[in-house]
Image (cartoon, rainbow over all chains, first blue to last red; front, side, top):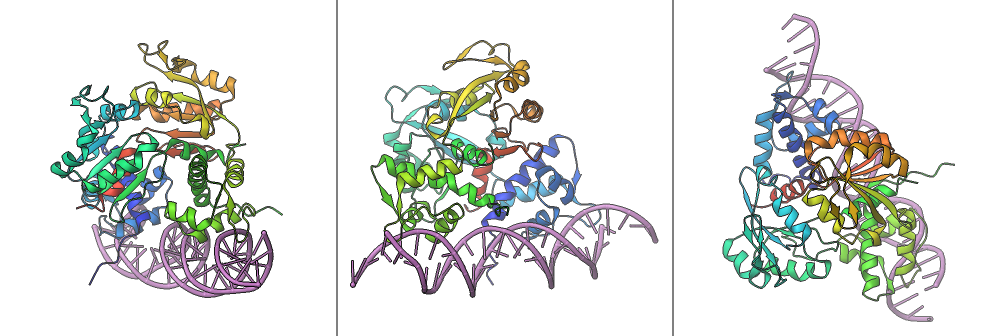
Length: 206
Length: 206
DNA sequence: TAGATTGTTAATCGATTAACAATC
DNA sequence: TAGATTGTTAATCGATTAACAATC
């Protein structure tokens, strides 16, 4: 019998739980409870327990959850008990800043290559990488079997580059361009657009 | 009679609609329909109409929506029919990249000042700004009556800086640090954490 | 007019919460 | 043991969709 599929909204909360647990670990904590976790995150304890129960029984009545154990389980569930190789497309200010950011590796992601189409940038160094020519993006990403990409190109290029990524076999795109991407159903897209986030808050301001 | 409050999930979609409409405007389009907009965004036409109906009647039967008119209404609703002055906290790679990014102004946001606590950075130029000393952040932001901030500091500083922002009167914080912030109920926070977004997608990958 | 599309209602669907037996 | 907290069920709450009268 096919297991009932997990709601995407639940999947979306798991990385938040994981991040909080890893934070607790760094604080030297060993055990937590759904109530404590919920208070930190502004989520009800019942919801956390319900979400986790979709995947198994990870806690103990009376004591709660062993943080390390639960974090390990969440890493497995989210498939970040490994390191995903990531292609970065766009070596502008933002792309370079993200490439320098050291925090990805410990969360399961390793930037492997950076592309740009600007001849001025191709061949220059960004951290340990030499910026590659976008013209070769499709062939190289396909050859490397890379499935995850960060798209940090100007809005006008986002859709055509996304299409190349899809053709290269990429299945997950983190899109920093402020445009909606049209991709096949089996390709996942997440958007990061600061203006959109800000506008969501100004609604509540005077 | 107090109007029924609008669900936050609806508010969250309005900036997406607005962005798509502004994109259509740049394409030279004049009129659209809930169906067309929905197809572009992967949202049902019924939902778009329902969302908009919370705020008024903006369309015409038989013809749809005048794009410019609807975009203007959404800007009003979201309170981005003005320009919000924004304080940027953190002049690292990411903060500087964001400060250089020219796309905020047309979406309703104007970065006004940039802070850092690093003596090496204080006084240096980022775009048109001179990096200010974080020590003066509270007093200056309060004096300027700035309500919106982008928090781009290392994780360990995010909570204490957020507390200063709150004390300075900031009501909306866009948080780039990968930690949950604890703030009063009348302060809005949105999180941007690329690893979290990526982890949400790797769940679906093999 | 005929065709198209809105705004809205009612029905459906899904998510969250409350409550508690089980049990550490 | 007594106290605490899980995992789960059932009830509640809220969001989405389908359908259609109104009307441009």
